[in-house]
Amino acid sequence: MRTVRTDFPILDQRINGRSLVYLDSAATSQKPRQVIEAVARFYRETNANVHRGLYGLSVGATELYEGARKKVAAFIGVDPEEVIFTRGTTESLNALSYSLGEAWVGPGDEILVTVMEHHANLVPWQELAKRKGAVLQAVGITPEGELDLEDFRRKLSPRTRIVAVTHVSNVLGTVNPISEIAEMAHEVGAKVVVDAAQAVPHMSVRVKEQGCDFLAFSGHKMLAPTGIGVLWGRKELLEEIPPFLTGGEMIREVWIDRATWNDPPYKFEAGTPPVAQAVGLGAAVEYLEGLGMEEVRRHEEELVAKVLEGLLARDYVDVYGPRDPARRGGVVAFNLKGIHPHDVATLLDQEGIAIRAGHHCAQPLHRLLGIAASCRVSVYVYNTPDDIEAFLAALDRVWEALGG
Ligand code: C6P
Image 1 (cartoon, rainbow, N blue to C red):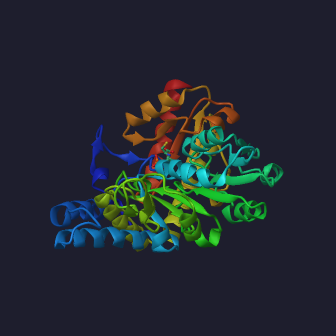
Image 2 (tube, protein in one colour; image 1 turned 120 degrees about the vertical axis):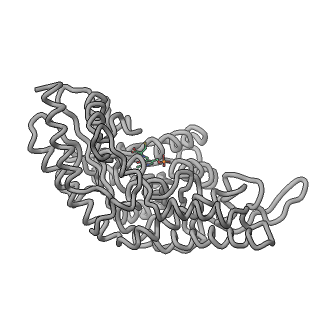
C-alpha cells in the first residue's frame, strides 16, 4: 500500500525523542488531514442545522449530511434509507435492543450471543432479556479461539428470536463466518444482529451478501470523528420496529395526544444529528475507498503476520486467538508470562509505543481464557513494518526489565 503515514498529522509527534508508534487503532483510529479538513471546512463554510432551514446554508448542510449517508451506504453495499446515523456502535446496539426487542422478543424467548462479544453487544441483550423475561445464552469458542459452530447449532432453537454476534473479535481477532451464521439463524426464524465495529474499518463488508438483518459500526474506528456511527437494518424491518428516541424530525404529524412517524431512516434520527461528524465520516469513507479496502485488508494481514510471527517466536509470550493471519482481523492480544499487562503497556509507552492493556470490554472472554487482562496490539492503514519491529524490540527490553 502507498505510504499514507504522512497524511496523519498526529503521527509526526515525537515522544521521548522517537516518533509515535500507534498500535491501538482498535480502540480508536487516528484521523487523516483529509477528514480533519472536511470537518473544519464544514464549520467554516456550511454549518447550519439539517432538514429544517429553507436558506442556502441549511440546504448545503443537508446536502452534505445526506451525501455522507449515500457514501456510507455505497461503502457497505446497502440503500441509503437503511443507514441510520447514531453516536456509535454502542448506541446502535442499545437502540436496537429497545426497538427490535420491543417488537420481537417475549417471555421465554431466547437470545443467542457469543462468549467473544464486546460488552456493547452483550449487556444491552442481557437487559432486554431481563425486561422481557427472555433467556440469554452464549456460544462458546474452540481451543484455537474460533467460534464453536457445533455449539452454535446446539444452542439455536425454535425459541431463538435474536442472534447477536461480532464479525471480528476485538480481542482474539477471530473473523466469524457471518453468512453461515445468518443462514442457520434464519432457518429457525431468528433475526441476526452483527457487531461490525472491528470489521467495516478493516475489510470490504458487503452487508447484503452476508445475509444479516442489522449491523452496527463506529466512525471513529475508521478514520472519522468520534460521535458518529451507523445502525443498518433491512428496510422492511426498519418499517416494522418502533423508534427508540422520539421528538423532533422523526415525526410525520403530531397532535397533542399522539404522533405518527416519519419513514426510515429519519424515524430513528430524533433531534439534531451529528452533522459535522457525519461529514467527517463521508470523508473517511472516501479516503478508505481511495486506498481500496482489498488493499487495506492485505496491508493489515501482512502486519498481523509479522506481529504473530514475532510474538510466537518469543517463548515468554502467550498469544490468544487463531494463528493464521488470514483468519483474523487487525488485532493481536497477548501476555508476557507472569507480568501484568498494565506494566507492559506502561514501559512500552515510555518508548513512544501505544498499545492497549486491560480486558478490552470483553470480561467474559477473558474469564474463559483464565486471565484478568491482556495486552493488545492493533494495526491500521498508517502502520508500517518498522512499527512492528520497533514494538517487538521494545517488548524484549520490557521482558529483560521485568521478567527475564
Ligand atoms: N472497542 C476496543 O478498544 P464504541 O465504543 O461504541 O465506538 O464501540 C464499541 C465496540 C463494540 N464492538 C466491538 C467489537 C468493539 O471493539 C467496540 C469498541 C474498543 O476494543 C473500545 S472498548
